[in-house]
Amino acid sequence: MNIQYKKGILDLLVLAMLKKQDQYGYDISESISLKIEISPGTIYPILRKMKDDGFVTTYLSEVSGGPARKYYRITDVGISHYLKLKQEWDELKTITSYFLEENND
Amino acid sequence: MTKLNFMESLKQGLIKHHVHDVDDILNDYENYFNEQLTLGKSEDDIAKRLGDVKSIIKDYTDSKSQHHKKWFDLVTVGFIAIPLLIMLYGVLVVFAATTLVMWAIGIYYLFQLDTFSFMPYIPMGVHVLYIILSFASAVLFFSLSVRMFATTKSMTMQYLVKQSIRIGDYQIKPIYQKLLIYSSIVTTLMMVIGYVISSLVAKDFQYWHVWGWFR
Image (tube, rainbow over all chains, first blue to last red; front, side, top):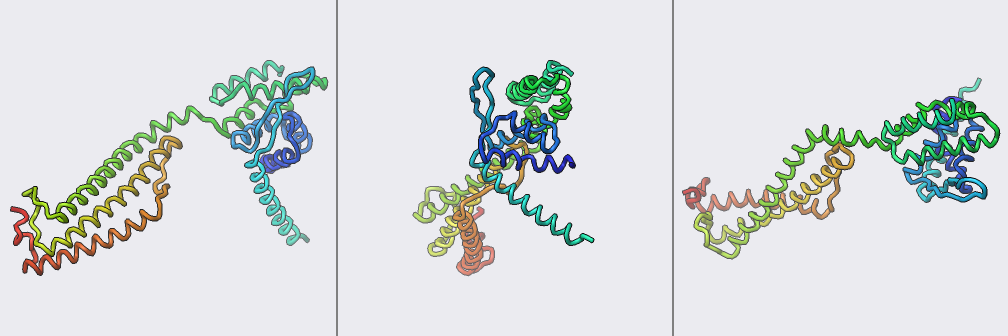
């Protein structure tokens, strides 16, 4: 898949995951990078930018027999950003399929 | 590449680019290594999977926190911004002073004071026009000062926070906008009417000579 496609949609994917429930940072990077073949190293910068923008917050959660895990939680701002991104995605999807079907031979 | 190599070059790169909370970032990657190591993967494989250190660093520097740039811009933009701001504050002071002076002139004629011999003579009756003119222009300069203050304040804040200035990026209450419009109309009207009436009363288009204003 085109790298630009992936980068454009990562925010939406992460926020969608977090909307359902809080997530362990490692799990976010792993589950996304396994599905869309993006290096997990590029997901951490995105998580951090979303934190700087106030879309998510983090907290540490103790795990027995291991170091504390960093969890991500979506904020109210993050939810409204998610809705905005989702709407944009839906529009893009509609437009794209319209043009593809229109010119299908 | 070993875990140690990866972590060290990531750390050096982040510090070099003045990214904030480096420890927090390093923790994320450290954590990733540890999780993958427990799955039995080799350090080299994990590092490969994480991707190129340079591009990771670039992701962090693209997003935010370019502290060093701020000081650079503060100085360079300052070459233009600071003289401009000083000038604007100067104009603001002039506007505010004019407001006070026009107000004082209005009061002076309104109460028929004659303390100052240098104040020009205006015949009774006609002086009403000049009182209105003074007060109207006092209001005019007051609303100009408010507008000027809003502009200058916004520009100062923009300069300090963003190191760039966009003129017109300010807000004033609609009441001041209305005051500005009405007072400028009244001021203009009073200047015209004042001139006409004064000329008629003094029977001279250069009535100020008749009343001996500049002697």
